Length: 504
Ligand code: NAI
Image (cartoon, rainbow, N blue to C red):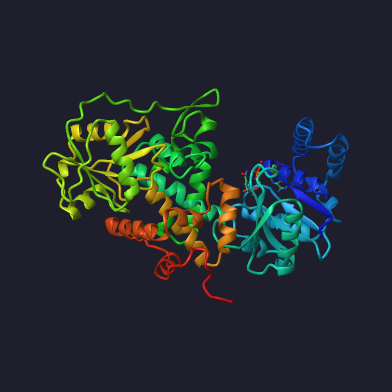
């Protein structure tokens, strides 16, 4: 086990890494080219620890012991006795390579050199080292003490012993170590691409507004934050750079295509919270939530007809329509003035009504993936009459549950976003980037998703997800939505998505 850890770079990440390991009993030496950054970091950490003490999480003696284990290093050569050095300096390849070259001249032969890089290749950072086998990635998340996960990144030449030693170190500090090979975005920043890029894709097609998309995804799958709120929190400049970097590194695989919308907004300085304006406006740091549309009350004059095999959904629709004073027809064909509701998977309303031969002016679609008790989604299409939309919206919300009206979109909002998340998760395990269980745990810990990608697949039904993707792909004719073989095979063989590729 490592005993003496050098941390270089005393910024947001370095100070957190120092605090984590000082708290778990290691001696930590903190170095930064700006001496004042070290003082600030140590004062910042002491303050955090004092707050923990005030809440009764630490004794005074424990606090003093932790603080005493974090010492400033006046010069790089003070790190000579360290058995592990973790760098968290500026994200520039040449600067990190130079730092490791300088360190190799100082530290002993068995000292491990770790990089907290979030976007550079660990292998490339190691490529100029005398001993690339001692270089590994150790990628933490901000704020380090609270985000209980770290990616342990295996460069092409990293010695397995060092990987295991970093895993043990993370474990004893209470962080979940997710081992991953050195691939673009590693594990978390790779798996996280679907959420933002698919949301931007929907925005670019005029499917719904950012606040609608956020509301639908909070109340449906239960994300703590919608994609646009998340862009605003992270800073669109940071998120867009990650989107571009992963896309470039995967040689323009259309799964990762970034959005021109993000590029333009970055150019305009609409970065989010930090500039006071992003997808939302901020006043005194508080998000101004746009009011939800309050449509005028209309008279419900038409009966409804629903196309679905799902008896539970039929029951729910029937119940709310009764509340609205409307009727749900039971015939196999709609009557001449009925509002027809279809429930497609991965198709848009236009395709679904065409396939079923339903009247375009009075056919709308209802999302079967929505959380019925919290928020419903009604999808219109270009031929739908406004009075039909108004009546359907009012009737389906007669019990007070909000109804979002969105424009035609293959897979509504939830289906296509969740299918993209599941599909990318499947692709990641197919590529051997991580084991299925590690993927789900890492994503929940690092990104705060209510479920991991594979668990989302199970929740909505693996076959449903595959159907959504197949239909998205045929609606758009784009390889962006091609189903991962991992997903397809497990649906074909009726196996859980966590099933490995072969039996031991
Ligand atoms: P930061 O800007 O807060 O801190 C960087 C610190 O490094 C500064 O105090 C700077 O004076 C110091 N520094 C710069 N060049 C140096 C050198 N050659 N030698 C010694 N010290 C030097 O940056 P932050 O956010 O802490 O990021 C550091 C690293 O961690 C970057 O590689 C970043 O990509 C990565 N990272 C950042 C995350 C974040 O959320 N901020 C998350 C995960 C990784």
